[in-house]
Image 1 (cartoon, rainbow, N blue to C red):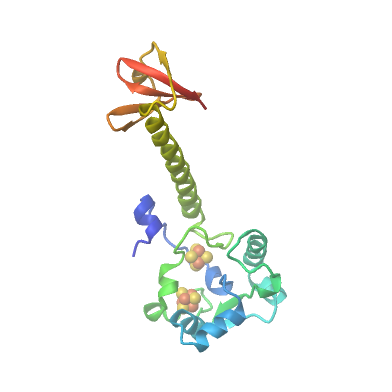
Image 2: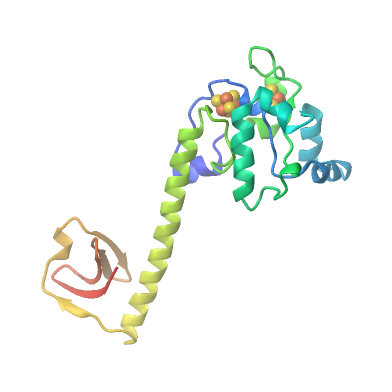
Length: 212
Ligand code: SF4
Ligand code: SF4
């Protein structure tokens, strides 16, 4: 089933190439002890997790099986807010159902979190995971959208300020609409973005609002 990122950003996931690394080097952002507590309280995710996952005895042991995953995860743990800050809280697990040929031994009955993987482009993926290009494309589009939304909100505010006379703009004698500039329509007026300036107007007249 398509996840939120695939649907909203319209970037379909590629096919998994069955390296098995995501089943041999699992590291949830919740520390081991916190997951145990959740499982004891009946949390479904935690219970399903412990029903299939076996923790490695140490980072070194995990490193012998999935060195790239351990490296990437520990690096990410230093930077990401939602990872444990203490490296000792980062625990690696392997799934008891992964077969020697890297196929899932319970494919038809695998838990939902395996079916959804990766459910977001922000998870740490194995260095050779087939989903890395998908994750990069999603993140790029996501951050671009966030930037566009911030810029649009600012421009909307500027239109309001202009209408209410709180700011003024200078008249530009140029047909900005016929060029390659980007434009957005807001309440019957258009905002035109060139590389260096923001203009407001409609075909035939434009005002320089401000320089970028
Ligand atoms: S249940 Fe299957 S898909 Fe899920 S982690 Fe285990 S081997 Fe991988
Ligand atoms: S690491 Fe990526 S490519 Fe390899 S089995 Fe997991 S999802 Fe598939």
